[in-house]
Length: 560
Image 1 (cartoon, rainbow, N blue to C red):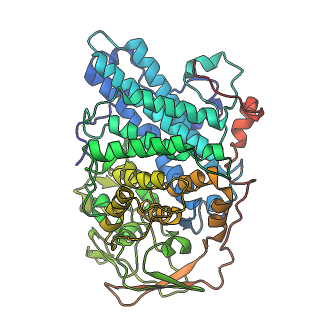
Image 2: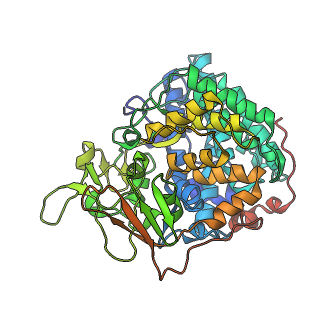
Image 3: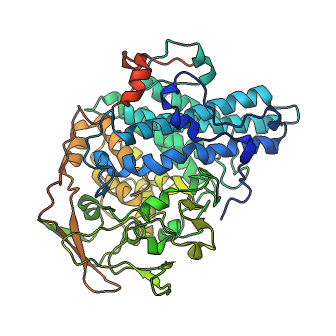
């Protein structure tokens, strides 16, 4: 399933993608430097494809390495880091938090690179470039820009919409734009560009018309709550649009659910039938930014990877584990009966569980298959399994320290099934709609769970999304979507979470059938306080000092 045809033209054609990150304070004042700049490079359809290939990998490198889990999961409460990234774990991210600035910059790297790609195509595309190839290439860049703005508006609220970095050289009037107008921009962009994308990938790993329509389903479902201002009913027209586009993808596209959830993350899983859009990483020794460095921060031990393994302090939270069907909460103890949900083992390493696809290189030179160890102390870590593929020997030699070739999911088909169910539920307390139940159960039973027979409720669908997409950078954005129309409930969920340390004991070693989790008595941190004053992430202080217009009231954005 590897993307052999999605080659990225590196070397002399590219300047370092990290130049923009290093010059973050200038993002509003000049175009990014990290781009394909050879005017002679845009002369054929193949060259145009190579130019936009960069948008599937390098420009998202900072997001993939720092923002995806830090914001998407640590901030959401699905996982914690015992010693690193504490600001997001403890929900006290400030304007000076390092991870905040890195995340802000990562999305504006995508925006700036997308803008420059559009400009270069319009300026340099030669007569041999077909009209269809040109439309598709520009659509790809607009897609990435719109998606980056979705992350920006959901994290920081009012942000400046930039469609042309070159004009900013002489423009001193740039202001933040209102949340409503940013959403109008990204939805109108996604609707327009969807018409210029093919129904099947032009090459392996490329987005399609259905990818764009899937994003429209996601965008409309979120925006449906925006007009409620935190307390009220969601917009029915947007809910209907989310239902419409999600069902079109389910019934008309060629994407399909994999039969096994575990296989979604079993190497080589790249560009499988369920993947609607993934970041396209390649094993690329010596080419920083082309490969996936995130597994280095997720691998829990150097013995089961490539000498990195810096994820030993990362774990599921108590709240997250309680979401898996079969765990019963008894005060300071969670007890699992026979756990049927296959997503647990695929998402977190559980003591005693067998992971035959991963080998360990021990001191005596042996390389046994991995059985996740049991730490008998009063705290241990259910470390992150998703995106962990093992040592180079486990993946045909296609990995090294901070250099992994496995892709990062940005949208899977299962999301369309759950979006449809939530859109049908809408503002009702429950729904017994047959199609909504069918789609919900397609996801639910794929995980090994019995069919859900009761009417669907908002809590049921929310919990399913949390378990289905844990450690995929999704949970925080589900909470932001909820916050748009029900602030009180979003705060109640966050403030009720237990994010503290605990120990997990299997009923037997190896091959347990159940586990008992017990809270660590001496752990002082367990809860956060979320409210109107800290829910949105503050704009980084460095950006405010260099672009004082960001301190002014936001204005509506009008696409000229």
